[in-house]
Amino acid sequence: MAGTLRLILGDQLSPGISSLSDANKSADTVLMAEVSGEATYVRHHKKKIAFLFAAMRHFAEELAGKGFRVRYTRIADEENDGTLRKEVRRALEEGDFDRVVVTKPGEYRLLKDMQQWESVLGVPVELREDDRFICSVNEFAAWAEDRKSLRMEFFYREMRRKTGLLMDGAEPEGGAWNFDQDNRKSLPKSVTPPPRATSEPDEITCGAIEDVRARFDNHFGDLEPFWYATRRAEAERIFEAFASDILPCFGDYQDAMAVGKPWLWHGVIGLYLNCGLLDPLKVCQRAEQAYRDGRAPLNAVEGFIRQILGWREYVRGLYWLKMPAYRSMNALEADRKLPDFYWTAETDMTCMAEAIGQTRRHAYAHHIQRLMVTGNFALLAGIHPDEINEWYLIVYADAYEWVELPNTHGMAIFADGGIMASKPYAASANYINKMSDYCKSCRYSHTKKTGEGACPFNYLYWDFLARNQERLSSNGRMGLVYKNLEKKDAGELSAMREQAKDFLDSIGAVPRG
Ligand code: FAD
Ligand code: SF4
Image 1 (tube, rainbow, N blue to C red):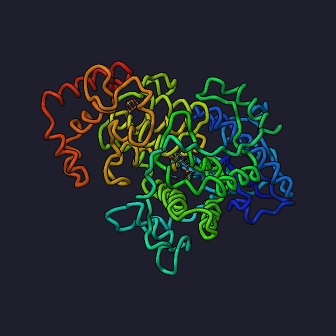
Image 2 (image 1 turned 120 degrees about the vertical axis):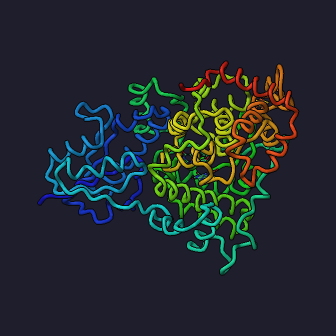
Image 3 (image 1 turned 45 degrees about the horizontal axis):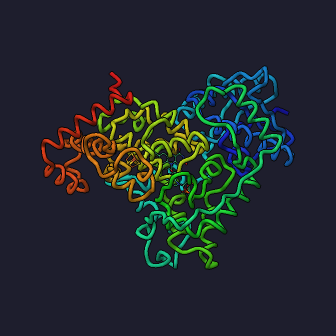
């Protein structure tokens, strides 16, 4: 009897994935494939590739242990055809299958490719919804329909009502939907971030690390030390350690940054959520439990749940609502090349060196580093969206286009002209100094606006405002900022703009031409 070929992608490592829901273990085969096409279409961080290959291998083992027949192609296998489409074709040629079932991928590029598979492969190909999200693509589209403004905050309230998370009857727990005003503390010297739970690489993970070393050694980033979990039980253990020991302070220092302290009180769970090792709803429910048990305060738990139930679901809905046009938007006509130090971390700007350096080491930076340091710099410098989007997709272990693109394109660089954010997150050194200790050890002065030793974020900030005055000054939320620009001494402004141009040229952030 012919069976069904069930393809599982590298970010679909969930036992409840829709492509397996009606599997017949005695007739069907699960196909998993490590293909160079996916690992290199952008040159992903070495640690990200090793993490995913190791997690895939463990998931294949998990499925085999449950009685599934698994056909697994490793990156090193001689017959490996290098792309998902070709691996599906090879499996169809070598087995007896009358259809292919796959859960829709998280990327528009791959979805478009899969939509052609039925005609090119000559068998029915069923593309199923990815129902691991709390809000479906259709539900988001229905929410967005006829709305003038697609702000996350309103969507988030709907999700709270829908799930009942942190609700007190029809009202939000604690009488407010959002406790962000309590979550903007900088890190006092006397407070030390807690140690993190780590996972020791086992034989399977070490094998994946060696395969990546052999094939992708010229990709960005450090492969080792490697301590991310690659098995579900380990990811759950690490999350549990976070929920019981770290979550209580998540809110307080959510926006803080500090030299040599990459994790602070963040979850460091994006990589597990996005490949299916952790379940977003369960994670939110566990956080709520910590609050109900009196073990974590409301500002921490609400802040944490909002990131997942609000932001994560929202950006996914927005991505599928707006693609493919979204990707090519460039509202601020940014046109410069990405400076080389985004890859090397070699810059005298301590904030950038810290954020990029830890990104190289861990394939991780927390939200404020991504948004207000590397993202803010790209916004102020006018880096072309394609260059900066590709960088973010490459460098983070949790990066997939559905979540990376709206965050970068919409939130960090305002390339979507305000669909996602009501105004650009542009900031001078003042913000970075307020939220971090970076400026203390920097060669630049955060208070100086021009001349030798002035912080580049300062003159780039004013240059950004002046350059985009026509586009942004009518934005109500930018009114005060543009009033300040108008009050600026013309000589000082032109000196800052001159210095901005010289600086950008000197770091290779030149127009793409
Ligand atoms: P925590 O601070 O502990 O938050 C918990 C979880 O909430 C995260 O793991 C994540 O799943 C979710 N979350 C928080 N903020 C967001 C957000 N803005 N959008 C979606 N989910 C969110 N997140 C990714 O998962 N992949 C990306 O490729 C990615 N690229 C980003 C690029 C830019 C320019 C910016 C500004 C943000 C990006 N984010 C991305 C969002 C956020 O920075 C990361 O989810 C977060 O830093 C992951 O670390 P964490 O697990 O410690 O998060
Ligand atoms: Fe960054 Fe400027 Fe502060 Fe240096 S002085 S750390 S460049 S904000």
